[in-house]
Length: 469
Image (cartoon, rainbow, N blue to C red; front, side):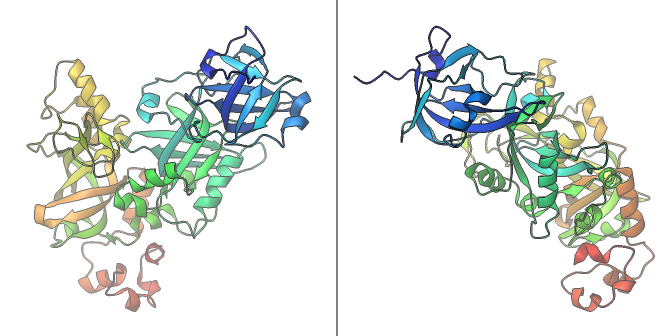
């Protein structure tokens, strides 16, 4: 007579003779400060319920080569204790500990869902809706590298990056030791261009930031798995093509071997010019300039629009469910920033359109969060600009924008308000107003003059040429 299979959700400490049909979702090794190793894993049954499993050091040799991630199996017998792990990977109140009499038989079980990830919403992280002892799976696009600490005596490698989700929420992610080294190796490989999407499992969450756990975390970078490829495909086209930049602050901590500097990557394939020259452009052009945000240009649409919950596309009707072109089924569209701001430099002034991700990065909150706060205070009019938006004004910023002269505006693609970064752009890249058109043609390579400029590097301002090769 065959033994009845138990459900993971029913596991308690009333017996040891449990029989589980499960998939091993993840397995990892833990070494304590005395050098003693044990195994931990997460198993899931056909209902999607999960429980954490411990294999102690004295049973390690028996199981270490047998257990494989993503395998399905029947597990019989095990001690059941309260889940007292310092860092928990699932919500089950119990854990299983292998006994000497525990058995495991590999078997094909089609009814158990495939290995997957349980991603934590960035909005919940920013709002503090996290369990302090819970490890989470994280996925996001690297928008900036803001700190690098190299491996020096008394210091460990750590790389701090800003991760952005598909809603425009941004959080800090700290990658320590081998995780930081792995990221830097990928980032500095000249073969790797374009956006960087990382997936970090078992991430520790604290104070709105995440970091790898010392044991068990896995870091996947632009790997060919459905989760990463799906995320990448939903990024705006311009973001898919652009490699994240290093902040100027991070450069003071590290002198590693990236082929181009953050500034050079920022200006790559764009025309660098002062705002006065910028205002004279008569056709669509990708430009880099420095300007100070002056005041809001109040449009008839206000400071936000309703869009898809995954990508930045505008919803056809804010009150109706729909299927977005990105494939996301949207039950309720969410507010996303679209703010028009006049910027100035000297006597020149122009209208810039700031989009969702750039605004969220500066303000530290999503449009949805800001809108909900207004509604709680009895205000739902998009024409009423919250006081918090004032944080966008009176900032001197380096902009990478697409000039749309037909509409007398420029769409912001990327920005940086770091003082050292802005100063370097101004001093080394911006073409002065009194330079002739001939000099300007030499200074800024484009499709027409790139070949003739190639032998004329000496005519370029300091470091400008490297940004265009």
